[in-house]
Image (cartoon, rainbow, N blue to C red; front, top):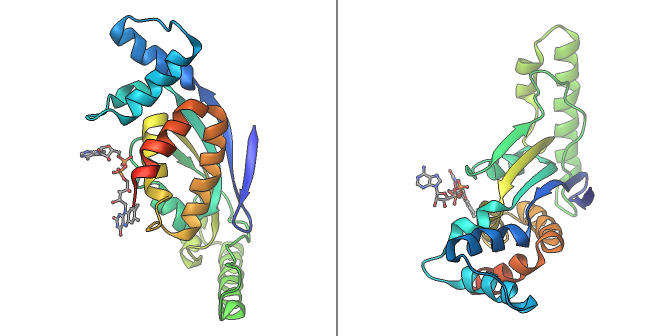
Length: 205
Ligand SMILES: Cc1cc2nc3c(=O)[nH]c(=O)nc-3n(C[C@H](O)[C@H](O)[C@H](O)COP(=O)(O)OP(=O)(O)OC[C@H]3O[C@@H](n4cnc5c(N)ncnc54)[C@H](O)[C@@H]3O)c2cc1C
């Protein structure tokens, strides 16, 4: 299981993978009942599928990934807007929040920010100690608090997320996670990831 550290305390890890480039080839070749004649035929086929319009996109859905992620809550909120995939997240109803929050680098008023975050954790801990339910006490914590979740997603939906969250209009912090996922994705599904980079990411403004 490969993990890449992201931001000051976060990470992303590839926990499981089914299929890869071979699954795309299987999905495509069953349609045409065809066979590769040379080693390059499969690569050519994936590249053709990636740039065809309209796209024969379902062939990319046969490769599936499970990612583990630790990120600030504000990143996870954006991430979970992507509906085609399955998420499970650490629950602050059942678990006590750890004193871990995102600290941006080189921002003005950083010590004020830190003071506010520390004060919110001080109050959270006092409320829990005084008998508040964790599900209510968590209300005082900031969106920079770190959370953890797992995400199971097929390669087509993953590339939709990557295209949107690598785009320069996406929040910088979210882009750092997308860059890390792209690195691991490229190692796992190199032919599809290269074609995606060339024909989809390369065509974005
Ligand atoms: C830079 C940026 C800024 C954003 N700002 C905001 C914001 O301010 N507020 C906000 O609420 N959201 C915001 N979003 C979230 C955005 O609106 C999408 O919800 C998110 O990017 C998920 O995209 P998606 O629907 O393509 O992905 P998924 O939800 O994974 O869906 C994948 C694809 O499935 C299809 N699909 C899924 N569900 C439906 C459906 N119900 N009907 C029809 N087709 C469907 C669509 O083709 C869709 O592209 C922002 C996203 C980005 C990248």
